[in-house]
Structure formats: C-alpha cells, structure tokens
Length: 300
Ligand code: G1P
Image (tube, rainbow, N blue to C red; front, side, top):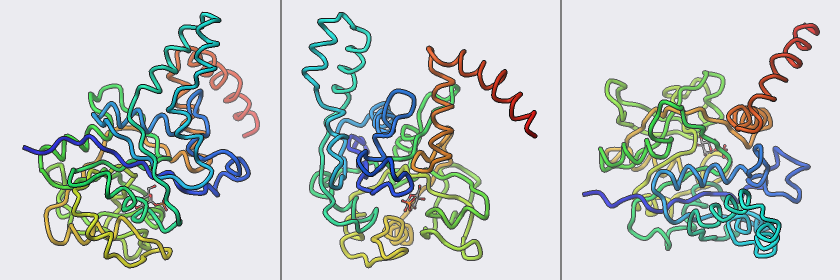
C-alpha cells in the first residue's frame, strides 16, 4: 500500500520581477484573482486533493501569505458584530483550510533548492509540489482537480509522477520538458527530463506546468546536485537522475492552466474565474459580448 500524499510544498520565495512595480511591496502570490489571492487557488487545489500540511517556502517580505491563512481577530469580530455572516464564514473556512508551515529560503538558489529546504518536514513521506503562481481551473466534467489526477496516477504506479501539457515548439525553452517513452497508455513512462531546452534540443513538446508528486529520494539528488540552467539548483535535473534509474511517470492533466505569474496569464485567469463567479458572471459576460467585442471589432 502506498503512503497517502498528505504534505505539499508550495515554493513562493520568488521576487516576482515580472510584476514590478506591484510586487515591490506585495508578494506576487498575493495578487488578487477576482476576490482571493493567487495562492488561495493553489492551496485550495491541494486541500481538495487530500493534502493536510502545506509547507510554504518563502523569502523576505512574504509574511502576508501566512497572515492570509491565519485568524484576523479584529476583522472577524467586526464582521460578527455587523452580522456579515456570509463573508465571516468564508474567512473562517480559509483559516481552517490547512496547517501552514512556513520555511525561509535564505538564498534564491532555485526551485530545487526551495524543495530541499523542506526536507526535514517531509521526512520519508511521498509529497506534492505545487508552483505558487500556476492556477489550475478544473473542467466541470472532471471529478478530480489537477493535483488529484496526479495523486491518482501515483496510487496507480507507486512512483513519482508529474503533470505534463503539450506546448508550441517556440515555447519549449520556457519549461522543464519530459522525454516520454511512449504515449500509448497514461500515465506515460518518462525516460528523462531537461530544463528549458532550446527548440532543437527538446526531446518533446511535453512541458511541466508545476504539479509534481515526488518520493523522498529526490532529496538525495538535490543535496548532491550542482547548479544547472540559469545557475540555479534545478528540480528538473534531480528528477532526470531518478527517471534514468527507476520508473517515473507523467500524466497529461485535464484542467485549464493559467500562468498567473505572467501578466497575460494573470488577466486571463481573472476573466475565467470571474465568468464562473455567481455575482459577476452575467454582468461581465454582458460587458465582454456587448461592449468590449463590438468596440474591438470596430477598431479592427
Ligand atoms: C519552473 C520549472 C520548470 C517548469 C516551470 C513551470 O520554471 O523550473 O521546469 O516548467 O516552472 O512554470 P520557472 O518558470 O520558475 O523558471
């Protein structure tokens, strides 16, 4: 029997330079998608997939993230006195979502190093990694969200497994890329991984969108790793070492994925979430259809 996946690492130590000047004082994970910060959607995905402990890897100036998942006594008291029970209930739900464990990554040495920072908390358990600026909106027809689909693949194979998505040839150099043995049956067996290859060197167009289920042996490879692409300790390089020694799997996930760490991805995530929001969907869709589109069409 596999040990259940109960712990997840969310690396959130990046400086968010793509969102400056906003991220000068606000962590990029706290930028709002409709009415909740980006990180809320990531934690919500983890919790719905059965995670109980969230290990946040943070840098300086990120305490707003852990505060968001904590009690705000004054606010809750005021909402109760004002009888604003609906929003009070939402705040109570958020702070009860998960145990949040926060670790400082004291130097910006890359994703592999961020994951290594959580080694003593993970111990011997298999665990999940969710990148803190990737939002996955589940398809209405799917019973599992993206991490849930990975957990299912892990339970089936008992080996490390990652989410993959097919990207355009010109985009392979932005991602970790999986070298897939065969796509006949999912989950696919992986032969190796390469971090941000050139279009010519990429073994496939199967990219890593930032959802991983890993076994604790990744820590041995991370502890002995040397800096890779961009001079950083790459999680992808450590996964490559494992895939070359033992079975490693990849699963094409079914969900809409938004890179909310990128301006366009962030805007798209806001629109998609708003189009599902009970208070906004009608008004926004009316605006998009009847005001924005006709105006865009007029301008050509
Ligand atoms: C990281 C990972 C990369 C992955 C990507 C997904 O890169 O190193 O393998 O494909 O996230 O967004 P970053 O975008 O942090 O440079």
